[in-house]
Amino acid sequence: MDDLAAPPLHVSRWFNGDASLSLEILLGRPVFLHAFQMLCPGCVQHAVPQSQKVAEAFARSDLAVVGLHTVFEHHAVMGPEALEVYLHENRIRYPVGVDAYRDGDPARHPLPLTMAAYAMRGTPTLILIDRKGRLRVQHFGGVDDLRLGAEIATLLAEPA
Image 1 (spheres, helix red, strand yellow):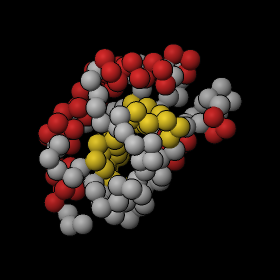
Image 2 (cartoon, helix red, strand yellow):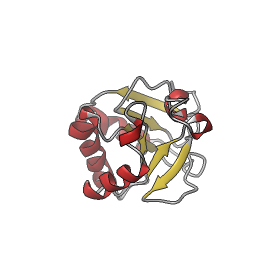
Image 3 (cartoon, rainbow, N blue to C red):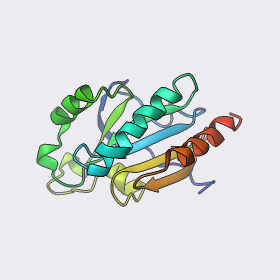
Image 4 (cartoon, rainbow, N blue to C red):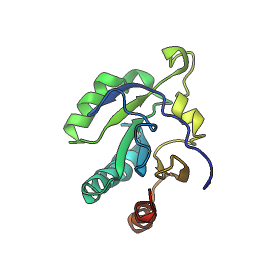
């Protein structure tokens, strides 16, 4: 995966951040991208709390922590309005984008664009992108905290 450029994020709306956020803007910084669904048990129990810990632990570094709400099922109950409440109730402060759909229509095209571009198998999916915009790590499911910390530290130690 070391030489594979990370695909762009296809986001229809951003919460907790600048509406123009993109991987291009984040070039020069390692990126921790956390793809989740707010009704995914593994996301709620493990991945979202882990992402919040990463955001807190690396707040003084140049690691960019970004969430991606990528809904591929139960579209009607996980829209942007519900996500906004979820983010507030769970005190999620890092930027979170809503994964976009082709033609903006999840009924006709239920697989979100970023999810498809990264060939995600489901949620949670954790992606690490290096300072040069290369996809370095992609995990589906839970990741051990120690392993994740080591992977992040490796990216942070690399020169710009």
